[in-house]
Amino acid sequence: MTETTTHDVIVIGGGTMGTAAAWALARRDLRALVLEQFSLLHEMGSHGGETRITRQAYAESPEYVPIVQRADRLWQELEAESGEQIVVRCGGLELAAPGFSHARAARLSADEHGIPYEWLAPAEVNERWPAIRVPEGWDALYSPISGFVQTVPAIRNMARAAERRGVTILENSPVLDWGADSDSVWVETPSGRHRGDAAIVTAGAWAPRLLANVGLPLHVRRKTLWWQQVDDPERYRPDRFPVFITDSPAGEIYGFPLHGTPGLKMANHAGGIEVDPQTVDRETHAGENRDCLELAAQVLPGVRAEVVQSKVCLYTMTPDTDFIADRYPENPRIAIGTGFSGHGFKFAPAIGELLAELVVDPAARPIPRFSVSRFNGSGNRERAAD
Ligand SMILES: Cc1cc2nc3c(=O)[nH]c(=O)nc-3n(C[C@H](O)[C@H](O)[C@H](O)COP(=O)(O)OP(=O)(O)OC[C@H]3O[C@@H](n4cnc5c(N)ncnc54)[C@H](O)[C@@H]3O)c2cc1C
Figure (tube, rainbow, N blue to C red):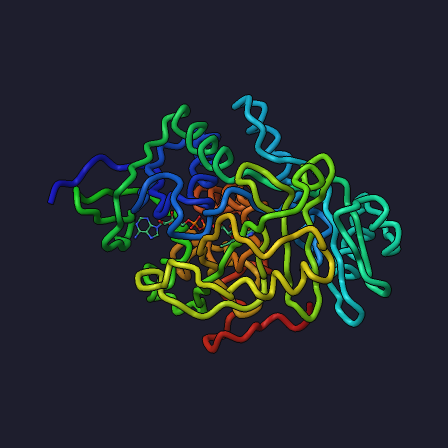
């Protein structure tokens, strides 16, 4: 097998986080090689389906706020460099039925970090957005700086920005095997062996396989996305309708204004069966959107049962739903970015930057919340408190 030239850093997996890492490495003038098993942008992993919500009043934990703010600045830099819009700031509603906590947790994060929001009564929401009917007793937080990231221009422009600064991206180049010697990292693909001074592994749903030695407690979940027909499309335009996240007995249903595909995109962040990305059922089936329709019947009266389009996408979950972005145990030349647990896209450029720093700067400190060592071998979190 032929061995090609040595690179400063090899990135295994050129999806969301891999292209973000490539862009970050390029900004540091490093010669990086990205190996992607499919094409740049595909629907087999975790970035399919056109749009991803971005929000800063982060219900999951206030610790995420500085990271999403850094990512937001980098998305803006990428927009300026590429001349293309990446983030659509249509505002975002976080809605919670009585007894459900998401909206209140988002308010805590917003208060801690001074993020703009309005705490609205259901009647105020219904008056401002006529397509929405929030039942009495629900909590509602509106943040004007929320919106959605367009996945295609986001990934394409991170890749282009990296390539312009000398990064090589090889598509259709699956990594078959990889390992480390005392002073370098090697990677095998069908067309040859590559060497790097360092490596970043961002293999998404395939990480459990590529990182089997680390024994990370990851599992992959099958998720379905639905674009539902609506009565009056004009009411769901991004200038009239926000992204929304709901927390209710129907699940954690979220959705987007109409954008591109002519249907209201909805999905359930909760649930999904455990799968293997090699064998997962990639077709959707009648009835799999019943949770979305249950929520729509309560909150979105103009949403119809007819489906315009549907897709299957994969979450790579950690037990605590926090990310893994850390050095490989006992090998500081290698960084791992995985386990983004269905909420990683908005953070991508900041995560790419962190992974790049971890492999090139021995003094760079990982974020404890995202550490490999928080799992004590049994998949349990070691951190004492949230
Ligand atoms: C349905 C759905 C909705 C979501 N909604 C949101 C949202 O609203 N907001 C948000 O912030 N996040 C959201 N997310 C999460 C976000 O999209 C993911 O966290 C993010 O895309 C994960 O990036 P990744 O790089 O780990 O995976 P991917 O983007 O899938 O990239 C991994 C790449 O590695 C490649 N690869 C794997 N193995 C190999 C190999 N052996 N050789 C070469 N290449 C390899 C894969 O082909 C793939 O391209 C959602 C995810 C899904 C599935």
